[in-house]
Length: 272
Image 1 (spheres, one colour):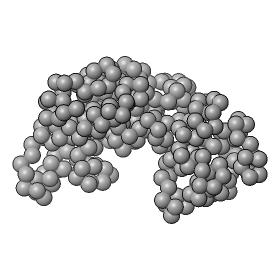
Image 2: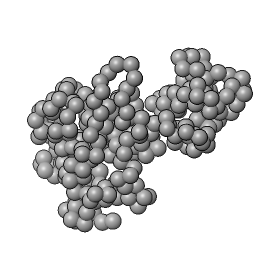
Image 3: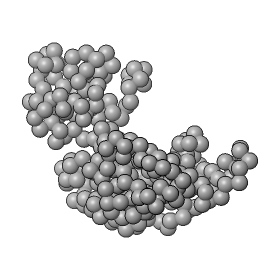
Image 4: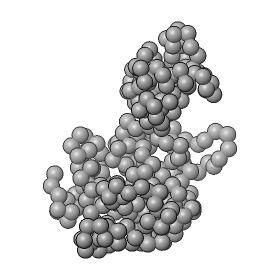
């Protein structure tokens, strides 16, 4: 239904889940839902709400704005469970389960995006042997995670710009084959250093644009619900987020507010 209506499946699922919690907490009532009950696990209610979101009908028009704007409309304490980063709803990958996911989503230029760093399958999972970093330590430690996110975000910038599917990583389209393919198609003699520097430049151009809009360290934070213990099993580990963020900024050449330094801008041949 989401695909037919042109709705993002991740955001649609997240915002309907937010609506269900708002209903169960009494912030929105059945009267305001035209007599419907938006209860967790009710598949028919999900289908109906997708229709309402697509048609901007009733409460669907509120949810169709995304959880950040919907929470602002509802008021009260709804922002406490309006899980988003920079206005974007997170995917199914839990930031508490793998620390690179926490850092990658928090620092993504477009918010809680799992493909901006694409680390979730490579932390206690697959290893990109030609990335230049050794196999990552266990997932519940900050060691090496900032460097890995830094490198992976730069690599993903190249995947995006070359219009390559990131699933190609699982078929062997890793760093060196991608550089080789780029040279074969374009005739350019691009070495590894220039390749990664280009990815870094791409990421920083986006960051400088965001800085102009007022985005800084305060916006690189995880939603509070991502930093509390899970109920019903799992682990009690929580990412030491600020520790990793400080180290990440050092790799990026940004100041403590998350703004690229003059030296980094000059190094990349950019301007503010």
